[in-house]
Amino acid sequence: MDNYDYYAFKEITENPIILDFSKFQYLGEIHLMLKEKFGLPDYYGENWDALWDCLNGLFDDQGNILVELYGFYSMKNELKNECKLMLEVFDDVQNDTPNFKYKIIS
Image (cartoon, rainbow, N blue to C red; front, side, top):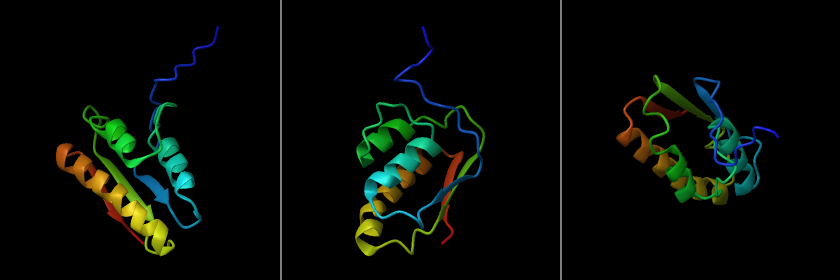
């Protein structure tokens, strides 16, 4: 029997967490990156509400976490506009969790 747990979060191994949007054409690709980088469980629903559900409280018992966004401004406008909702999620998490910070580098 394996130790697979559908509900388990995976360990976040990088800090800062680098999110590079420069190569993406589709929203689904972005959600897969977020799932990987934040160690989200397999049940992650790949939408902004699900992202908030997973990130809310995730960093409470960890040290300072910094997320750096690269290539955000160079995305196609349609994709960038959709991802502004992601920034709202990050704002909410940052407001609720003082040790979580993010910044857009490019």
